[in-house]
Length: 112
Image (tube, rainbow, N blue to C red; front, side, top):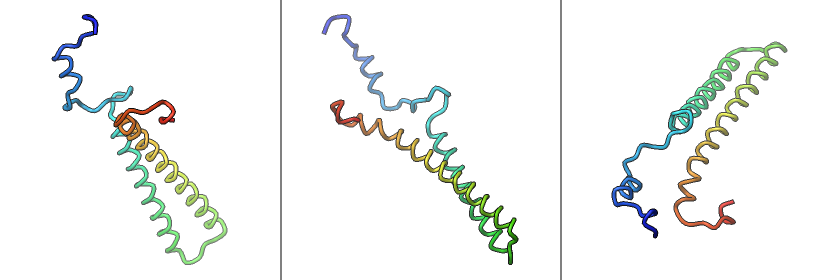
C-alpha cells in the first residue's frame, strides 16, 4: 500500500464499529417505520373486511343494490389488503437482500 492509502487504527475502529445507528433513507427515517406503517395498514384493512362481512351477515335479506354495494366494497377492500401485503413483503425482501448478499463473496453472475 502507498502511504496515501494507509488507514490508521482509529479509522479502522470507526469503520468496524457495531454500535452504529441503523442506516437512514433519503427521507430521514429508518426503513422500520415503513414496515410498521404497512403492517398497520394491512391489519386495519383486514379488520375492515371482517367488519364488512359481519355487518352484511347480520342483514336478513339483501336488495339488489345492497348486494352490489357489498360486492364493490368487498372487492375494493380486499384489493387494498393485497396491495398492502405485497408492498410489505417487497419492502422486507429488499431489507434482507443486501445483508444476505454481504454475508459472503459472490460473483456478478451469482447475484442476478
